[in-house]
Amino acid sequence: MSKRGKILILLTLLMVMTGCWDQDSLKDARLANASAFDITSEGEIKQTLEIVDDSESQQGSNGNEVHSGTGRSVRQSTDRIRAKVTGDIRFFKYGMILYGNKLAQNDIYPYLDVLYREPDYPTSHVKIAILDGDAGDLLHQKKVGSILIGDFITKKIKSLEELCIFPEMTLETLLPPMLDPGQDFTLPYLYKDGEEIDARGIALFHGQRFSGSLNTEQAPLYIIMSGKWNKAARFVKKVHPGPSNNPRNYVTYEANIAQIKRKLAVKVASDSQIDVNLRIELPVTIVEYAMNHLQEKDTIERLNSQLSDDMTQDAEQIIKTLQQSGCDSFGIGRHLIAHYPDLWKSLNWNKEYAQVRFHPGVKVTIVGSGVLN
Image 1 (cartoon, rainbow, N blue to C red):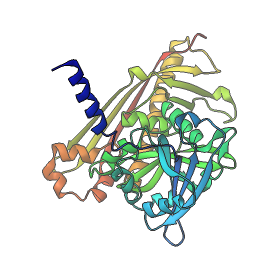
Image 2: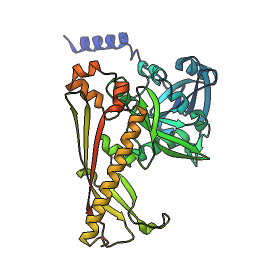
Image 3: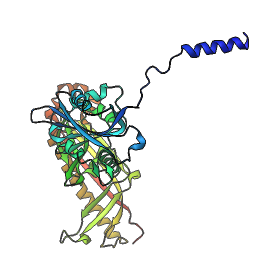
């Protein structure tokens, strides 16, 4: 074929070929950076959206709008918000979702179903949290200082995940445990203190319902017990008698994350009694200890023993709260499904989980004390 013929064929193909038929122009899009869901006194869903400019580069801008809409479904509430704003609403792939605690005490899945079914809705990086109070009111604050409210909450959640105060969870990673009959899940728990947004702790779920919480002091040890620790975990303990307002009576220490060892073993006796042994080896570095004397072997041994006892008691209290809340976030049920399927079929796990005998043990070993002896 001649060169001229080849050129004619290429030109003909270019004329008949269409562009990307599923191309989705963002020209008129409005970007929803944060969503909040609450339940009204009439039982309707109240959705609140923070809407910013339509490009990721504008996330640090100073402009945002907050709109609310109610409906009998999430989709209906979204459509009613769409009727109030110009342009088409799209959702930011690094955004976040808040649920008010009253709504979360119901089955939370119906408020998530549409998000998983919508092919264009992002899930892999979207953070999700529970708010003690009305989640929509928090978004109406619009800013914290110069930072847009959605950006501020997302950054706070990420920073507290790194400190093992919040469990690391996204909309994508939430789905498997939420649908698993043998494992429950936990979420970050926030509250509004005046103009401040603070951490309440960890929200516990039984099935798909918010059923209890752990406070921020319990959170780092719980995260370690769950086997999903992050970059840092710090603890403060009173180790000397005397006034509670005297800092000399306390020690602050940080876990050596790379050296933590966790072992969980589930055993079933012949009478079907379920026992769970949970052992944590926790090497730590002292970061504050005003009494000093850390160069003395007796001091180190005494602190190792006292901190091990104290943290084992803390672990027992955490497990007690989990069982009272019906939150099997350690996946004991999932272990039974895998290794004792006949027993699992005979159990009413909603009742039997509270009867499981846990045997936690935390062994603290001081391996560093900073540059000051």
